[in-house]
Amino acid sequence: MARHPLKGSERQPMHGAAARGKADPGEQMRVSILLRRGNASGFKARVAELNDPAATGGHLSREAFEREFGASETDIHAVRTFAASHGLTVAGEHAGRRTVMLAGTVAQFNAAFGVDLQQFDYAGGSYRGRTGSIHLPDELHGCVEAVLGLDNRPAATAHFRMRQAPRKAAGAAEATSYTPPQIASLYGFPAGTGARQCVGLIELGGGETPADLTTYLSGLGITAPPTVTVVSVDSATTDPTGDPDGPDGEVMLDVEMVASIAPQANIAIYFAPNTDAGFLDAVTTAIHDTTNKPSVISISWGGPESTWTQQSLTAFDSAFQAAGTMGITVCVACGDNGSSDGVSDGGDHVDFPASSPHALACGGTSLQANGNAIESETVWNDGAQGGATGGGQSAVFAVPTWQSGLQITLTSGGSAALTMRGTPDVSGDADPQTGYDVRIDGTNTVIGGTSAVAPLWAALIALINEAGTTTAGFINPKLYATPTALRDITKGNNGDFEATTGWDACTGLGSPNGTQVAGVIG
Image (cartoon, rainbow, N blue to C red; front, side, top):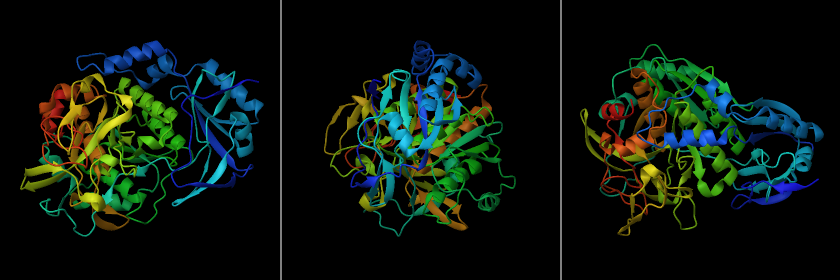
């Protein structure tokens, strides 16, 4: 039987990881198979419309999308047959998500996909992994686009920063904090409650504490908390650690941000394992959720592009394209490690999935207010210890049409043409020293990071959707066509890139002027 390497599936060990032997052949595991999309040419035309700011085409329902662009029954059947021939169990399938879940042992998956799974140790723990390509038999060659979950290394980190002892650079903003409604007011968010909207939150660890949310909102004068629904993905669910500085911090930041700004919006939290398979499964589950039907999705997790396989990069971007055709906006944090994105090779890197051209990439600022007016707003850069907004130029994705002709300004002097996808698109307050008052694991604290900006923008879009006759969907082309709807940030840098008039690789087009953004995308 001929086998074919799956394009884009090549893997190398994590930086600093060492193999200590073969993975346990009897270990039970699950793998997600991503199939090709039906009606590929029709979908390509839909995506072209998404990227045209003048396009007026309507959004598809989730059901209509599945019928038109879901995986074919023929391809799904081919995976079922393949699974049976290797003793694997079909644990689930979804045509709209183009996903078939398979369950079995390490030994069975080694044989099925021509891999040799090993156990690797690294500074932060251990993982089951592989080196090289995944191999497909003739019957799956061409119909399978990705095989995720063989390798279960951590896929992403949460992009939040707890406020530490003051250590601001000279001339930087003094320490202060705000509630999310105060920030919404400073940014001129339109009136509303988010009624009839659902905001989806993607979480790869930690848990939410309903009592903390009730106490937090009560302190803000909100006595009727929104409905919060926990959605389990790949057997993961809410699991509070009790550590405010752990993943609970991310979960509660996201929930409290949305709940306090859009208190009548429903919130659906999709908990998934922190693996490439779990992350993508959470995203596609949220996008295709016909029960909760989120109109906007917030993602505050990610990692440098260089740590992802090409099959994952392509799969996430395709999922975000699908979201846009269904009128769903996807807001993603750009990371908290400046222009290097925390990679120690001396180069510039951007964070993914924020670098997907079909995500709204959210960068960070440092904000000082005087009463109910913004006094100053600059790029968030607290130095090597304190963090800085991510941003830069993708090494993977081509420059989208709506970023054509932009320049990237260098801290070292001069500028260059933007030749690949640039991030961020937009920004908002993210400096922990000018951060958000939140409650996590029974503790009132102050938190920042670009993790705060993704749910901030998600809450804004929920308010805009509430007032509109349709959902905003993919908003990037419209924002770039009308940049005056945002507050241009022109001071500061994130390392190698400098803020300037117009778009820049630190704060994108700027922070929101909420009512003007509503006028552009509503």
